[in-house]
Length: 289
Image (spheres, one colour):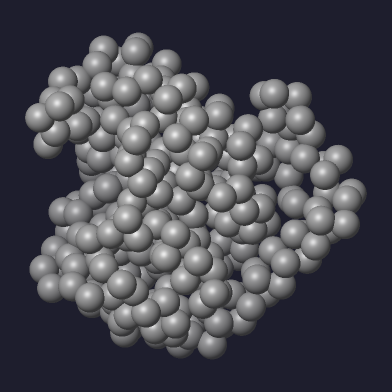
């Protein structure tokens, strides 16, 4: 993978540390696939021990995707990560930072706990549109460990309408410029292609027909993504915020990966949406570690 700052991680792969990371990732992938194979008998719901207190019929098909996971923040409180993994959770995205001066209070406990339990996890940054992109990425890099075995980082882009400090919407060009800077910095720091998380409103205002070379994680809790996100190929789908998962108290967001167990293994080994491999290979991206 060739990054925009000229660093070629393939050179790092020749080092003992790089080789160890590759072996660790391959071992993790093999273990995950073995777990999935053991659970594949139930084709109607690949997450049978999990639930939803307010299920919506418009997103029922999300449960049929074989790769299921969660995203969490301090609001879930202490988490029993061994129970989360035992329930069949294949991934967890953990809130790390927000803006340029806030760290989620439970980030390190969740980050370390998920790793100990063997749950693949990634960190997400919530964008605050009234803080500079540089300040936000300096803060992200200061507080999020650069763990080569982690999932790619996530840039969470929504309008801050809930905030009295920053209720305004930026012009589309300005928002995209900030996003591009932050995505580049995340990739330089982690060596992984970042994922863009967004909701219906922000996507319509800013992201339609934009940034096609990045994986997208979309929120749609009342209909399938194709009905809400015009012309957007999605990789991850957040389909409920009222999920129930063993090991987590109360409501938790549940998410599904678009594809098969083989496509998930491909994602784990390349940190890219498998459907983009051929198209992005010419840019030196999405090569197997």
